[in-house]
Image (tube, rainbow, N blue to C red; front, side, top):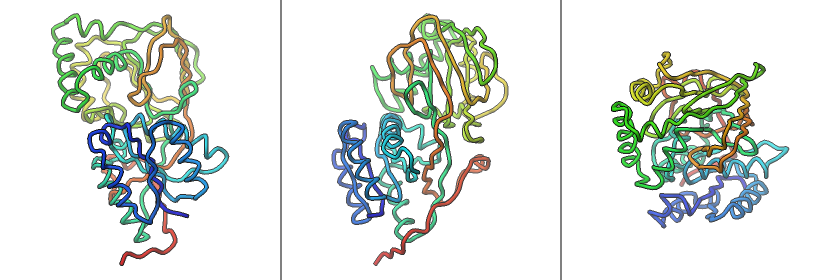
Length: 333
């Protein structure tokens, strides 16, 4: 049965705050698809298998960035050897950087309504083509090492809201301007050896490393404005400067400037190999993973992501887009 298949993570933040959200999604979808409520990876895999057998036209994921990357890993496993359906991300988690990078800023119900209206009326919908990162044995949109995992550990221990994140960032930025000890500890250097694409391995000392196929961090910082320009090419930011350098760069990073910034090295790559002296925890789309010394980062599969808005933003003209539909004729009465 074609339609829209929704995987709804009941452990996501918005689903915990509003337990009836799943019922709202089910009401919106109606007979035009199905909503599977999941509480574990096994639940998600069973739902994904059912959606593949049903040959759904669009796969929707309701949850945050962590839910999205875990569900996409399952999708790549279940759809191995065949083309997966376009993916619709429904923001309803602690962090929603991925849908925001695609221009999806409304809530999950509004986003699903906008998509379903076009689908039922057989109106073609814009999709963005985007690779995912392949990091060791995982797939994600963004990888980070150093400052970001340390910051997230503090963030998850406190108020996990946009206001809480903004306050924590401001506290560390002010501490960095004052050359405080908290910011200095956050910027403890990571030393190792890094190889970019086919180049030679070079020694590296850094406070942080980011690799990303999406443009935005939390709080709308457009740290990676070139992330979606070219197939199989991700954008990286290596932080080697002081907390004060980063504090000064924050306004430029927020607006997505591509200008050179003191203390930051920015580059494009298709593959990156990194070995560090001591094991460090790292993050994939905001989820913290156990410490390790070896990182193999490359471009993973290219997928299609649904953008239900009428048009893309002006600075997205270099994005790789196409349209899906029309589907079988459907009418609303």
